[in-house]
Image 1 (tube, rainbow, N blue to C red):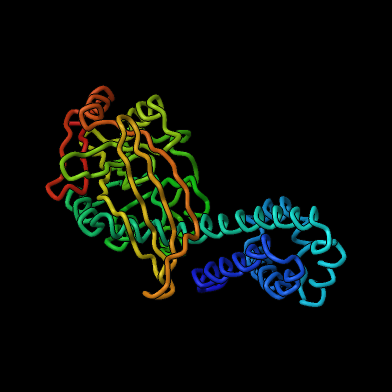
Image 2: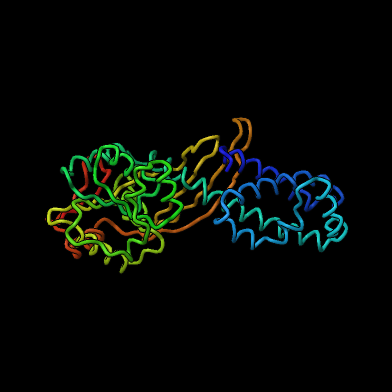
Length: 347
């Protein structure tokens, strides 16, 4: 994979816009885009070769345009344009652009979900909360030989810190790509990651002294005047309730369960003039989050939207969260002084 994935995405975006601009122009001028089509193909196949497993479905879905319309040399590309009548035949021309738009949409999506997502996770985590303080709290709560479990470590911003301090930390991670990225960043974590779904795994009873979730399945968003309990989109009330029961049973009699908090970050730079932008709207029982990745080459140029999507996350008030905590056996709940954790105790 190219070391500078951000520049690759920017270049692909520019080529895509140049090619698509001919859709409403003089069809004959589409010949001018043959070199750009060749370059697009080069980038796509380079990425596919370096991550065959992730891109196999992508290749199957776009087989015709990848292997018939897009060619590896300028001369072959011009021949393909003539052979398939893309220029002369309006119907074929429109069909090509529809397939090309779908191709580029899926390609950009795969680039973001397989590469940029990791940088976003790590950078957003480091900017929207104080991970040094979070780690310090766990260090203060733990004793020598304590067993610690992290649910959903992601790229491991907390787990990496704790392992450096010699703590006995295990992680449960459902996302294979996240697990692999964590191991790249921290090889010592490789033997400490359980690959699987937390809700489906059996945990040993009374085994862990500390279990924590920094973000992911659920977390708290700190709105300044209140903490809002926020769930991952697929987590239902029953899953939440049973998950809390499972955690309580897995904790030692004096064990503690920590849930992380995050602040509101509307804009975070993740390098090379690429920005993660999020607008969050709190409704009665859900948060709507509009997310954009934008790119700006210089202060004199307009920002380009490279990727954009909207999703919702179920939420509940702090009071409703307390009710669930008590019903699942936790005796006390407190907010850490630095507001980085909500700490549940069995005693």
